[in-house]
Length: 217
Image (cartoon, rainbow, N blue to C red; front, side, top):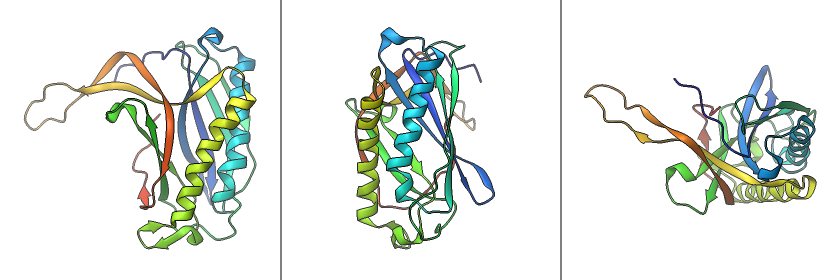
């Protein structure tokens, strides 16, 4: 696979958590910042990571099981191939006193943007949901899903308030469709010359329990 091209005034945010002996429970988010700050200085990159660590601690951790602990948030500036990368400490545990229902079960938060199409919407698979958050074997409690939706909206508000040059969370698209395929061969995605980072305009907490089958990095 070819290396991914830079994405102007965009950051990648890796939220790493621990669940039991699994120390690599990870969510990957993206965001866009004021282009006049590109590429980010180390201090500015650190400020974004610190702000997300604080927002995730305040908004998401109270909604997941106490068995989950936030390890850290890594912020990577994607504006240039050699963009700065910083790590912000976590440490908070979930605020739900009930145990995790299943290690692979996630509450999906859908990210919506102003543009239609698969390349312009994203999903965040939030792990660590407890047995108390489950309404039925295949569904999360509606109130918990709505609370998680509100948490993501509040996180973006928190980020705007904490970092003057933060603009919004974003859906980052590196690929555009697939090439012509040979029968029996898997289609190959077409890499964009210039990735598209679309600001998220709203979120939806989904009640259907999902499993995260892969991690986008």
